[in-house]
Image 1 (spheres, rainbow, N blue to C red):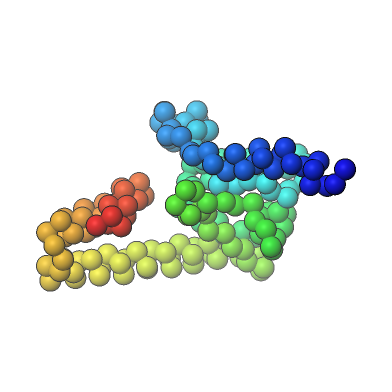
Image 2: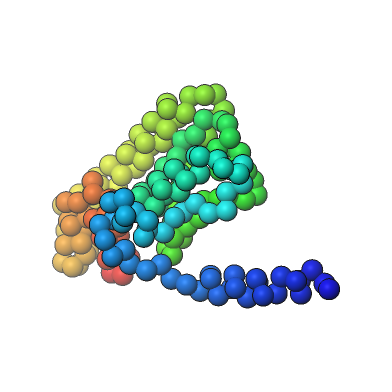
Length: 170
């Protein structure tokens, strides 16, 4: 029997699984029970059998998802979590997922803080640009209202994601 013939049924199962959509979470997202209804953005890790780290990272991706930024020290998790050409991290239906990087020099706390500062700097620059556009009354009244709403809630993760979707549609 040819190798593909042995796997044909599983290939059909995989193709079907890739058509399934993520269902809405029926309970509070950040509760213990509710976190398990969220899509994990970690799959198919190459970690050793029984590795205790991967369940924690899977849970973190379920809690923080596409807003998660990981700054790792070099070690096991940089092997199973960042080996080229594959990665166990995946994306949601919008193509967004966790950002992962590691530092070779055991300074991952400082490295992660640098990632945080860079992200905050970009967000502040965007907020300043939006303030300037609003001061100049650029765009339609609807667009100005959406921008003002984003600005009012730009420190809230879920709020800005909703506004981002509204702005894309506008």
